Amino acid sequence: MKTEKNLVPFNGYFAIVALLLSLAFLIFGIVEGHPFDAILAIILSSLILKGFIIISPNSAKVLLLFGDYKGTIKQNGLFWVNPFFSRITLSMKARNFESEKIKVNDKMGNPILISVILVWKVEDTFKPLFEVDNYESFIRIQTDSAVRKLAGSFPYDHFEDEKATVTLSTNFDDINTALENEVSERLEIAGIKVIESRIGYLAYAPEIAHSMLRRQQASAVVAARHKIVEGAVGMVESALNLLDSKNIITFDEDKKATMVSNLMVVLCGDSETKPVINTGTLNQ
Image (cartoon, rainbow, N blue to C red; front, side, top):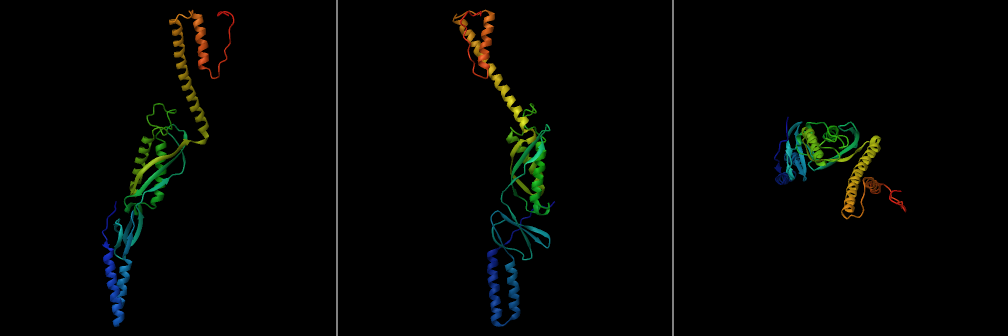
C-alpha cells in the first residue's frame, strides 16, 4: 500500500524572476524583429505561468503526472512545479461530522436511538484520494457501522444488566474512548485521523421509552421508600428509648406495638396524617 510522499517544490519568487526575464526576451524579439525568439519566449512564459501554485494554511496539493502520483506539497506560500503536473487540492483542517439518529439494539436487545459527533482531519493525502472511492462518504458509512457495533456491545443502563461495569448511559468516558478506537481503526485505510469521537444523542426508541420511564420511576420510588422506612425505624427506636430512659411512661408489649404501628404510619405515609384524639383510657 502506497502512502503520502512529500514533494519539495521550487521557490515561486525565483520563478517570477524567470518569468520577467522571459517577458523581456519576448519584448526584445518583437522589437528586433526576431519572430522565432518571440514565439520561444511566449511558450516559455506560458509554461512558467502554468507552473505557479499557491498553497494556503491547512491546505495541501497532491500532484500527478499523467496519472502517476508524484508527491504532496503541504508547505504554505508561492511555489513553482512542473507545469504538466495535475493538481488536486485537499483541506487539512479539522472538520465536524454528526451522524443521523439511527435505531439499533443494545446488548440486551432493547431498541435505542443513538447518534455520534466525529471530529476528524485528513492526515495522509494519498489514501483518501486513491485508497477509497469517496472518502467523505466512506467516513459516514464506517462511522455508522462503528456506532452499531458499539451499541450492540454494551447495555443501555444498569437496569437491564446489573452486573455490567460499563453502560451506554453512564460511563461516557469509557464509551467515547471505545467509540474513538473503533472509528479510528476503520478510517485508517482512508488516511483519516480521528481527533474526537463522542455520543451526541442517546435515548430509548419511542416504542419502549414510556415503559422504560415507568420502570425507572418505579425503581426510584422503591429506593425512596426503602430510605424512608430505614429512617422511620431509627426514629421509632430513638423515641422508645428516650421515653424509657426518662421513665415518662411504661409500655407493655401490646402498647409498644401499637405505638410503633402508629409512628410508622405517620412517618411513612404519603399524605398528611390526621390525628384521632382519644378522650378515654389508653385501652379504648
